[in-house]
Image 1 (cartoon, helix red, strand yellow):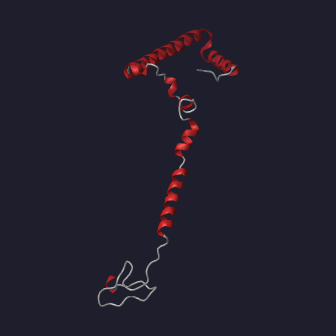
Image 2 (cartoon, helix red, strand yellow):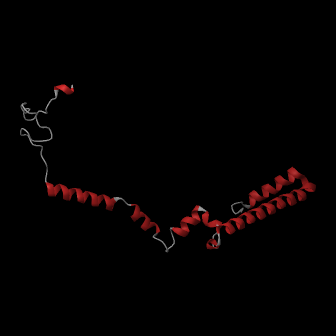
Length: 147
C-alpha cells in the first residue's frame, strides 16, 4: 500500500504526529487509525466476497487486481495465448483492404476503358427536344425556362 514511501517521509510523518498529538495522546490516535483501517479492510473484503458470490461459479478465479489496466494488458495482450500486439496491429491495419479496393478499381477501369462523353447530336445524357436543333458541340444545352 505504501510501497513508494521512503524512510525520510515516514520519519517526517512520525515527527509530525508527535508534534500534533503529543506523546500522551499518540498511542490512542494510532489505535483509532488502525481500527478505522481494519474496518475499511473488512468492508472491502465483504464487498469483494459479495461481488464474487453474485457473479456465480463461472467466475471463481476472478481477481479484482486483473481489472487494473496494466495487469489487464499484460494478461490479455502480452501473453502468448492470444493474438498479441502484432495480431492486433495486423487486424487494425487498413492497408490490405485499401489495396484490394484500389486493385478492384484499376481492374474495372482497365476492363471498361476510359469513357468519353459523346459530342454528336441526340447522344449523351441530354438530348434535344423534337423540333429543336442540337446545341453546338462543346457548349452545354441551355434551358431558357429554367432560368
